[in-house]
Image (cartoon, rainbow, N blue to C red; front, side, top):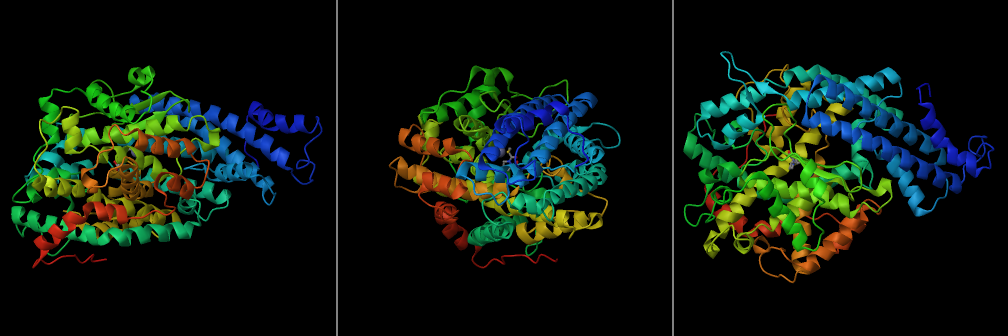
Length: 611
Ligand code: X8Z
Ligand code: ZN
């Protein structure tokens, strides 16, 4: 390898090997067969060095994300480069133990080491530095992006999202939708480079492309993982199609044939969300005529006069009610809860574990509404998971698979039921049983509506990484998938120079997305199992595990495993099942499906994807 390796780093990687061999070069270095003892020493050192580089990259990343400037971007890129280079170095070095009979942990850790990076850099020094810079720049461009119409009055994503959620004026909605998409075309050349260099890095590590590397992280063959996603999607697609049909019909009633084709895809600007990924903000337009949900959580939070920190306290108390320790004082001191007025930050919510032990934080521009109340639980789920596995060796300090990490906080949020809200004093009395339908419909507008979006973001990226979509086809390919899976279309013509995928955080930030699809299946599986552990046997949508130590113990046991065992074992520890299974989400929404089918009788359902 021609790449420069910092001398202290190289020495520290070799030191245990030298010591083990009594100062003679180790067998592998002498051209002999590597030994299990050498593998173990190599891993110890790799874990220590990687952790150190990771902590530095996390700190620099935190500062960049909470204070976007020319300098913080460079500092973060440099720290990330050092961490990535070390990761690539170690993944390559780990190959020398290929084929060696090893104890379980050594074999698993070597495998994890080869898969650990999300964005592997090429071994060429200049290319690695360029990739780190491109990645940091994309992140900044998204975070500081603004729509600035002629005549002044720039609006950022928070403001534009408010319009998307609240306005019922198609022209206003269209402007906000289109406006946010003026930010991303400038990302396109950078993204092309990101794809080229990321692919090169993945190929050097032995993968066909970066997409194959991402699909290889699930304790199964990459093709089997893609098939697994398809299988799960087939289980839930009828539910989505029924919801789509009802929502389209009601939007058509509201906006007319001019705006909503009663038999075609739904225009993407009418669904209450910038990406049409969740639709709960248009609940009032599609709600049952009688027996609505009976309360509005946003209103309750505002009436109570809660501030951002108090919202997070509610989330923490849910976890402590299950037996988890409260968050450390530093969480409250170091987190970012509120959008600063005087500097640019990446507002997209995230949870951090800066030192891989207990320096836990969230970064979120909290708004006082039901959506953010739920997102707070989502983020805290990450933090409680991180703390539960912090006793594991560094390479095991992660979730069983990335879908598990995304599912934990959402699982808890499923327990934020009306009866729970009564228990904690946010709601005066429980709504009558006939409000269940409204409650379920609102949940479906979040959870069911999300599923095809959760699937398609990586379907698009896999095609981009494999070269099936060329840069000239990036945007068209995106909309083909949006039509095919979501039955949603762009409200106005799009051009090849547009880069609509770049208007979604996870594309410029390089965050894999299949994890959220998995999480939306898994959270219902977790919820069902935890409700049973809590001794509950009524309808799943009314179950809250609040205060159940039994459920808490079950959850803690799985979280504490981290990544030490293949995910089916972690799943089994919590649910008794070894397979991801969409029957739980289908069971949860069963009463709604019956109602949707009644509503849809006589309606034309489905859409032509026009691919
Ligand atoms: O990005 C997130 C979290 C942080 S991991 C806020 N989510 C996805 C999104 O916003 O697109 C949660 C659900 C899907
Ligand atoms: Zn998350």
